[in-house]
Amino acid sequence: MEKYKILAYNMLINELESQSIFKIMSEDGTSARDASEIGLSHEQLRGIYRAMLAARLLDEWLMRIQRVGKIPFHAPNIGHEAVAAIAYALKEHDWIFPSHRDLALQIARGVTLEELVAHYMVNAKSPFKGRDILTIGNKKLRIFLPPIPISTNIPPAVGFAMACKLRKRDEVAAVFFGDGATSKGDFHEAMNFAGVFKAPIVFFCENNQYAISCPVVKQTASESLAIKATAYGFPGIRVDGNDPLAVYLAAREAVDRARSGEGPTLVELFMYRLGPHSTADDAMRYRTIEEVRMWEEREPVKRFKCFLVKSGIMSEEDDRKMREEIEAAIRRAIEINEEQPPHPPESIMDDVYAERLWHIEEERENLSSELSNKV
Ligand SMILES: Cc1ncc(C[n+]2csc(CCOP(=O)(O)OP(=O)(O)O)c2C)c(N)n1
Image (tube, rainbow, N blue to C red):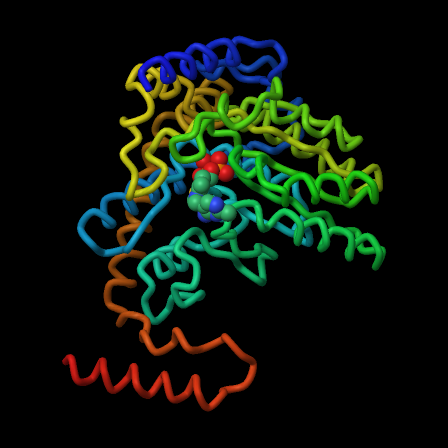
């Protein structure tokens, strides 16, 4: 195991220094391009940062409140925040099929902190009744639910994109998944189909270097994940996933390509899962502290803040105020949601069939009486 950890660590350093990764900002926020060349207003750039910061702070709160038993489970998002930029590359009428670490994307798209906290607390206001313990979806905002069985969102996303194409709708689908998902048949079947039929879709692979304890060197023998697109006849691009500007530009190009009928793109976001896989994981059993420290220096929130301050788009004082506002909004969202009663356990019988079938109703009544006897 020790030898294995060293192998993974050395490989990550080589990859990071490789020229084949599209990157604009260095670790200290120095950018190869001026903010005016990105194609986003200052307000939009601050909007991306705000969503990234809100995701980071909410993630920290969720980890803490899980430890004291206020929420059942959490899969931390720390290190994945640059996906917020993708919301700005998509149009409002495009469709998102998220992964389970896309809090920043959901917030950038407009999902509120209150709604997110209700979901994690599985209370009476929880929009999905605790059906999915990971991040939520939002019908109005055109965000589907992330899948629990990994990669199972990829074929439906391609099917959805194909339906948009057949109906001649100017809509694009964006699907998100991890490096682990690329070993599943769903990924390959969906990529093949999308390539053949030029589906208007962008595949975003959040390569955070691990699928629980399995490092990416054990996930694939390919030189990258992006290269897998070549076999399916469309472009694959490897992007620094800690660089929101590079993420935005790559996403915009891929989305434009999909919308103009040229077909799909695979965007590999090369990043790092800074936290454990979930609140049920001890990541120190399979990776070193040196490796984590190395990636902490490259983390996206701090890097983007440095860029915004250096470019005169935001001051240190603006940042401090923004943090205070978000912290207060999270505290408020938690307080409001704590006042809500828990979601009724009997609702587990809802939504299974369109009609209320007698045997399900019987089970519901049995559960109700069992629960009331316990009180
Ligand atoms: C089909 C399937 N197999 C196994 C699991 C258990 N599992 C949950 S998350 C996970 C790793 C996913 O890794 P990756 O796709 O790289 O995404 P990450 O969690 O790193 O963001 C596994 C194996 C699952 N949810 N679904």
